[in-house]
Image: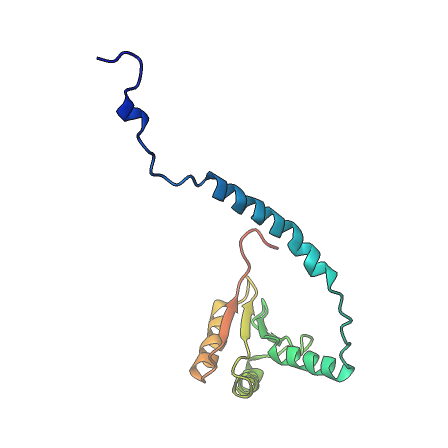
Length: 153
């Protein structure tokens, strides 16, 4: 029977838990302090950066030109154009020289990407034919370009 008062045994009972609330408070305060001071410390250092000579810029441009993809386009009439000479239209008789050029490019630069893009109205056989020719002759980085639905049509 309880009388509303705690007996002596319950009163002296110790709680054996660590109070983590002060540790969490201190951690959050430190986190806020570091978040506020970090941008200030980074902006406090000013450095005068040297400029690069034009020779290095030309080398960088040459490197970018070498890694630019080589694109072969199949027109709606079944003719071929390249990204190197977009105004020149190649026919079936020029296909052998085009394939030889692509093979030479891929042998000189193994990372050279070759893309084939065909017009929507182009004969599918023409696109597939050049793709298979390049793959059969050891050109590894050949891909077909497509446009996602909803694009220019």
